[in-house]
Length: 256
Image 1: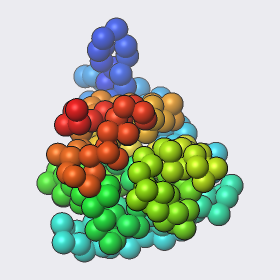
Image 2: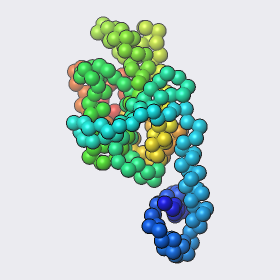
Image 3: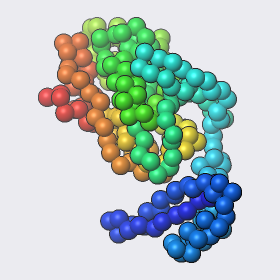
Image 4: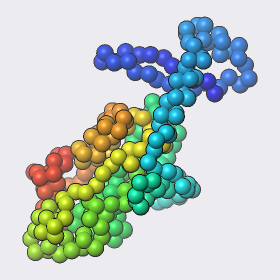
């Protein structure tokens, strides 16, 4: 494979788009292309190799397993990652031919056992995960990083304790604070590293959480679009979603 770059000007910024061509054993074709397009293959191949190395060096996560995952939504790949700096593990489902220049549907989904597995109506986590999987299947391209930080990082037992306080009238923030816990303990740096390890460069973010979007930008990904992923509030989710919008700054257009 040989890398060919074309430099474009967009909004006064140079954007480097990398395309690949297979020579099929015919170097004369590539040499001719080089002369016609004024491309220095040696230079561009070196840039491509550096780009790939840059995405994989100094990672604080490692991919340790991968397999096929047939689901009710379609065929996916599932990968397992481990943190090299903590005991945290991550599960990733992905689909399609991911390339840095190709805008890719992406979601960082925080673990929610009650919503994702048991179908809790107290939150919208389960429907969000299902919607994200369906969107990726429809697009044929995308990644979901499933972050094992239950209850915004407080763990399942503390989450159940917080639920009990919510039963008494506390909102999701008040419940955490009454338990002496942080409102949101999640960090997304390693989730972004996983995306880069999967060769993601430009993202269409399926999220209502501005902190996740900012984490992707801070980690070097280009956010080309935010894809809202929300549902009409129900009697069970109304207070929860209102707290997320008005106290946590989530981007929820259907909440008033």
